Image (cartoon, helix red, strand yellow):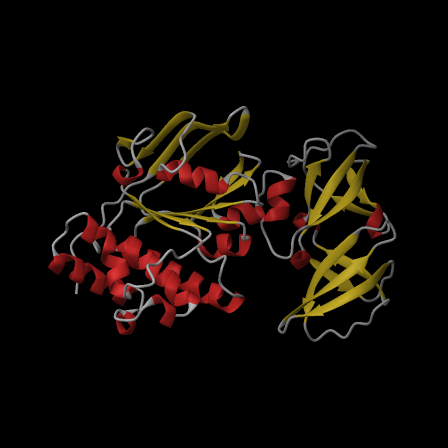
Length: 363
């Protein structure tokens, strides 16, 4: 059953042009320029306090934009009221009315704006189908699980037929298993209705699994924008390289010598590279992902500290002579013991290099 204005949502992209946000003299968003295309799933990611939720609330109109422009579709909405922006927001807290049924909660916004009862029922029924809530429409929120309550909150946004969906860490209150289930539900929802979605999270796994486009934020600045695997394989700086990917990238000190990079933590192993290197003696940071490393049992120099078994894959945490810790992804079949002396091997092309002063990638 297709529903008017639900299956055929008005598709709108979002554009931010030189947007700033200040609280008094404190600037928290610094000149953000960003294009989010029609139907794109864009994730804002970064550590706590980086400005991702503030930026989302600026788009929603819940925070005033100090300077710059915000455009949704063809409209400049910088000064528009939240209700006039064509957005619907899903928050971390469900904010459901406990005395109302699921159906009443989802349709309440339309009821308050005077939509016909038959239209509300039709849209609620279709939202219930999309979110697999058909059997729960007559229940009260107290009879639902946390994941079901969050789906009701998402359904409340769906029935409004917005141009843009905004999600502010919607899974933070759920346990680990429910988070995985809801990630799948949200990805399926995006595929089914095809609307523009902007999603805020501090969890880079959520970002990698959901996003068409990731915006990495730090201290109110955009560090890099791109597709998940582009950011994973081709980070612009050390911050993005360390934030995207789990476990995080290993960072080791290196020294430029004779057009090679010597890594003291790896028994002065020399890494060959075709990039333009600074002068001999310059210290650089060497980045190596755990997946790119392999244990070499015929060599020594690194001590196994912890062997973390996860089933199917394991991680060995190694201590180097320089005191730097190195994480290596290994097959779960490997039998390792604490204190065991091992070496490492890797393809030199897997190594990334960063300027130690600016943290920018050396290319």
